Image 1 (cartoon, rainbow, N blue to C red):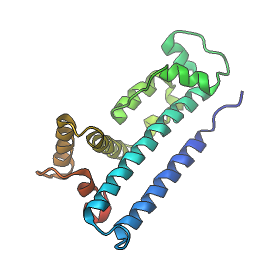
Image 2 (image 1 turned 45 degrees about the horizontal axis):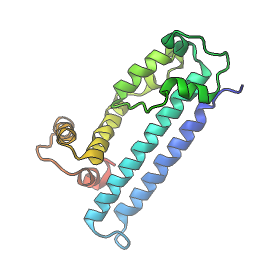
Image 3 (image 1 turned 90 degrees about the horizontal axis):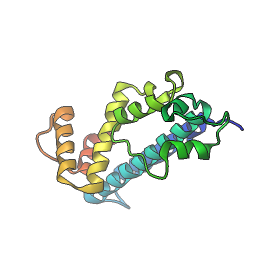
Image 4 (image 1 turned 180 degrees about the horizontal axis):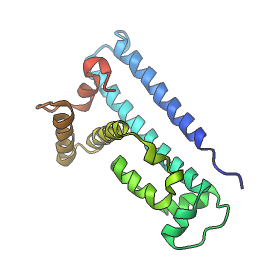
Length: 184
């Protein structure tokens, strides 16, 4: 069986990021179609949710493809024999079972990936500290936008304070579009 092409996942994910970046650039700079500030904020929040979903799909696919390329640690993790050339469906079933694996941070993703991937074949270990921090910020924003819970708001408020020195709470759209949307 042919092994997975890890580059393909990156290309699809990079394309989606670029597409949303260009979309938001148009929205931020336009005054005709979307002229109201609140509408731009709503769109920025929608884009963050879409990017988060794309990231989660990328992570899932990449984990499956990495295990498909080298399943030695997964076999050890489960304490079972896995066929020499497992298909992607089998790899996915072994990693995720019948449910959904929710990674709440990059550290959570890395902890899990260390259990199922050899260190030399684990691309998640290569995520820089700067990128880990930014991805975790997006997780916090996504959680708030998904739930609007007090817990998610406290987490986001704490991130605003520690990372940006902000004392007041801003809705994510306002936060993302500040400073000419450089945060987005």
